[in-house]
Image (cartoon, rainbow, N blue to C red; front, side, top):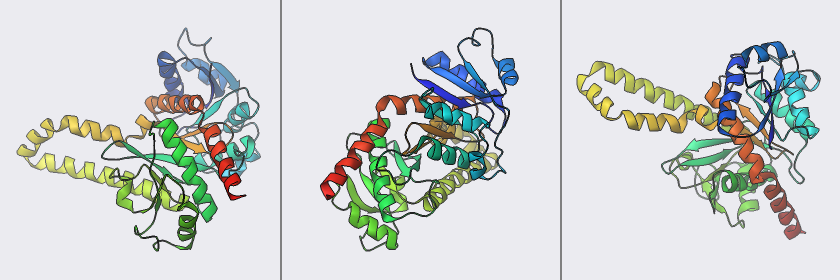
Length: 331
């Protein structure tokens, strides 16, 4: 049975939504949760019948959002360090944390190590499209990248789309300021040359292609990817605000809103981080899901489900095999 280590103290709202999310997940799937945090607090939140289903690892040191990410490597008794080490030592298969994202990525990368052949891991996000979802990476793990990093992100994204989203032949695009191969900065131009002969690569794509279903995997560095992600979140909130303001001012709009209620509900589900659960750090040995700090119980539950699926599908093995194959072809 899959074992998932969960940082019980890292979220913005303390252990309550995290423990609740674990319980909700157990009601739907069989797995072994290992909660890392303050044992007394965790036990006080567990209903009868669940105390024997959940293991607890004691830790009262929590990395706060104001702490530097690198500090987590020195704090070996912290919740995230202990949770990651459970995976490193083979006591768990994956880790889920809604705590300090930088600390989670740093500790996971340094303690678990990278998949053979991977230069840098990447953080993955799913973006809503007209036909489903697209894979965007990197969205924050690497602010500065070399062309070789982007080329590897393409491989990681391709197999993530295949295994996690069941897209048989993912189309991989390189995010640039135009579709022509001459577009982009020096790094993206060099990355284009590295990717041009890959079967899945369709060339440069623009920002609109993230949402219009013309592409399944969009590759960029973490600086650009994070800006795209935050801009999309901001645009969704602004559109929602305008709709609510218009409804308040027009009786006709109220009638229309009632008719469109189902559509709005579907749209919200597409962009709600709680529905996705979290962002996986792809390229490390093992599985680490970085959940939103404001995660509610539903988001925690879905982050756990994402971790279980990631482990079951063998994404890491497929990435490692493809990188090894590429290396042989170049030799």
